[in-house]
Amino acid sequence: QVQLVESGGGLVQAGGSLTLSCAASGRTSSYYTLGWFRQAPGKERNFVAAISWSGDRTDYADSVKGRFTISRDDGKNTVNLRMNSLKPEDTAVYYCVADSLSLMRRNTYDYDYWGQGTQVTVSS
Image (cartoon, rainbow, N blue to C red; front, side, top):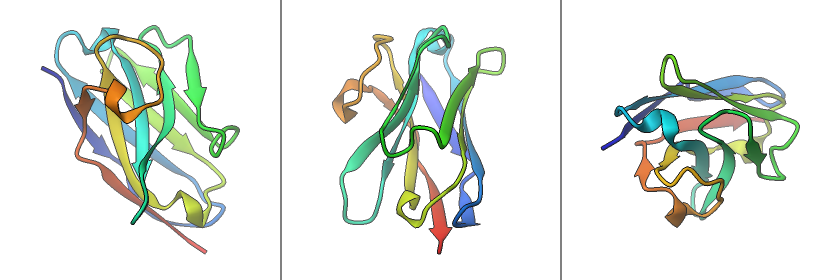
């Protein structure tokens, strides 16, 4: 069993930056793909970014590519999402996810562990 706990959400002005962190517990979580999804009010939950268990592969949604950076620290069992040049359309609840099959995928049903979510609000 893996538990994921997000932190770092909050309110930021457009153009600003924010870093989300996710602490993963569970002795096999170091071998899982970790990632982030987000869900804006009234919209579907969408893929944001993922990082392989080894940290050598990353994947980003087109909407965040070049602005967001995902990284992981297996010593601390955490995955971070650095978000720069934030836009009002980035406003959403951000969810940390883990894939026990350690694949790089983009669908919600591919991820078997989810955090509770953390709110990010970007004001214009």
